[in-house]
Image (cartoon, rainbow, N blue to C red; front, side):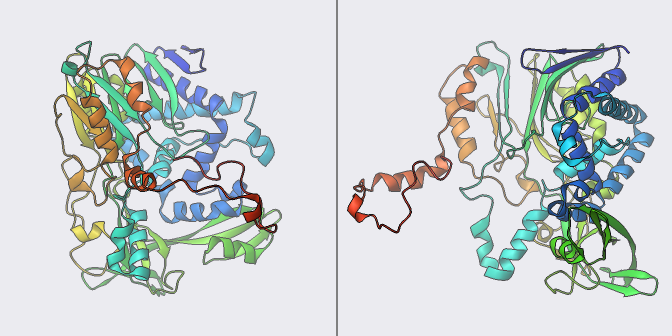
Amino acid sequence: MSAETYRDAWGIPHLRADSPHELARAQGRVTARDRAWQLEVERHRAQGTSAAFLGPEALSWDRLARRARLADTARRCFTALERKDPETAAWVRAYVDGVNEGLAQNGRPAPEFARTGLTPGQWEPWTPLGVWLATHILFAGFPAKLWREHVSTHLGPEAVALFAADGPGTAGSNGWLVSGERTTTGHALIAGDPHRFIEDPGVYQQIHLSCPEFDVVGLAVPGVPGVAHFGHTGTVAWAITNAMADYQDLYRERLRRTGAGVEALGPDGAWHRAARHTETIQVAGVAGVAGVAGVAGVAGVARGTGERETVEVEVIETDRGPVIAGGPEGLDDGTPAALSLRYPPRVTSDLGFGALLPLLRARRVADVDRALDAWTEPVNVVQAADTEGGLLHRVAGRVPVRPAANGLRPVPAWEPGHEWTGWHTPPRAGLTEGVAVMANQRGPSTPLGVEFAPPHRADRIAALLAGRERWSAADMPAIHTDTHLASATPLLNHLATLTDPAPPTDEAVSPTAPPPPTGPTHPAP
């Protein structure tokens, strides 16, 4: 086997192989060795089988994964990848072979396997695509549309703005690009500062991948080959933040049962046959049938199978997309409707994996730019720079062209005028005084979204960068570790006007009251 693995003082794997395929296989093996339990959890999440070992709390996710057709979409995308890009498909297969080898040969399995009695399962060639899809399905617009619908229904349409993501309480990722004219070396500097939810283990894995064709350091997503979001090939580097683009739609569906199955009312006023079948989800650690049905909120049948129960889930897909809530009998709250989800990979059978190998092979900004033309989701703002002075600041990903109403809340599937009519050309942006900042704020992706992060993070980074004429890589931690929170200014200004109240005396404390806390009860801001 022509692959070598070296670990540095921090345990980061450095892999070297004779070809990209051998390197992908080695990446799969080392990932299985380091992240075996994470890989197993992500495989089950992609398949919608998490409740089989995590129990009832995972059932709601499994139901969404099944009804949204995540695994089926991943299979479709891999089949299309084999047809359109056989080299990348074979590269993904090599990674999967390495994962399976690593899981089988791992002599020190993660302790979670012993606790759950679970044995690592077999990865399929499409599993990395399923992992990517399951990781990012909630990154786009449909959860926000459900929230706006909920707020509008209970508090009125005028209340929706009170809960907008543009408010001061939101956070997000940061990144910035400083051109060579503003650096001590004459070469550009890129900083990536991804602010993910707290996850253990994290969604990223530091890694070094080297073969005769490329030599790349960056952050990989465990379960997916290559380096996608943050990478450096020696002569070009790139980093991303979420573009806050809206590329998923929800449709309110009118469904009816017939002797032949289920039909959906289309925008042409006619009823059209919908695809329909049932799937079974196993649920571990459930005492009885009523418990399963109550936790899941699933219209189905639960049957005892020893230590597990099973729940049948009806899977329906209309011409718009898979039905993720409700059905012919209506929604759980009694509303006589159903909701279908339309999202690009389900429509196009393309998850953008064709960009991954070209990114590894990139030598200049133009190479990164071409690679990102194949990107699908999540839709990102990307910054890149190379050693020859090339700079890039663009949006990458696929966003459908459709009416503005689709971006706000679920729209009626039976009314014309809500169809997708093409794809937006990803916007591009330049630099201002040698600097570009991305922090999920309104920027180049503004035409593609509805709500964005408030501008205070981007403004703070821009102000810090303006405070120094020349920057070096050693100077950048000052920005990464900056703790100034501009959104807290109104609160701090208010606190400054208050006088310091005297602490209560012992006599003022009720004998029946609990003792005062001895430390902070909430995390510091």
